[in-house]
Image 1 (cartoon, protein in one colour):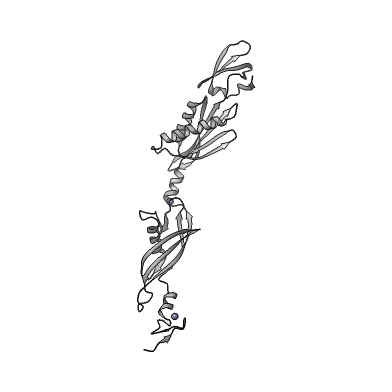
Image 2 (image 1 turned 90 degrees about the vertical axis):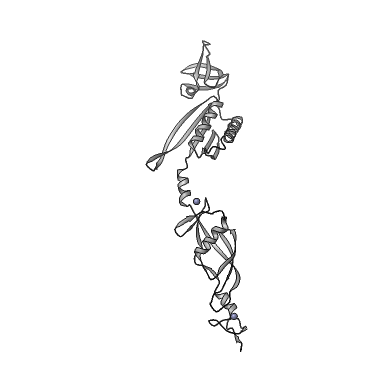
Length: 289
Ligand SMILES: [Zn+2]
Ligand SMILES: [Zn+2]
């Protein structure tokens, strides 16, 4: 049989398929092509949006999920024999090995293709719901009249660490952020229960007072959502501190978990002020004697 040259590559071949050799035909008709390279992906759980719904990675992990993406987003003439997934910058590279033929008169071959998926990050429905339902509670720790010392900060953080360890098996939420500010500490938690628990444990460890405030942040399913703030004020008074109590000159003689004991500097009479009252304007700190 007379050989014919392929008009594309010049090779002499037995026959042409649609005006070209089989090699050129394979080259111009890849066994797999992406119809759509963009994929919506949930940045929290890794689910991908396919056929109008979010698919989470299953037991087969990323490879199984990407096989589903491929089946949905690619045109395929043959069967996928192998698939490798590589995460790159801003996307995923799929290395797909396909056995197939682009034309009925051409024998199947095996080729490996590299396809690039562009990931567009979003939030899937269940993650969106989970995040919107996530409670946010704040634990504010402040000291007065002095500042929160480094030792106090250390003690507070170690109390928190111990409590989190004790609670580790109870799904009580977690600390999402700790801000070190000049006047104290701001500790954000994902649960009101955790914030309240920590507030009272810290309260028991220092002469202090807790103030709870609820701020309505929205309505969900007909009920109001509140963000709770627990303000713990730690009294840093120590014996020898001079204060003015309702106009009288007093000196601190003792501080316990509930009271600050004050002695009148003139009459020498001692009276005790509950910790929560020490922060009112009736008590003015004058300095250490
Ligand atoms: Zn050719
Ligand atoms: Zn998700």
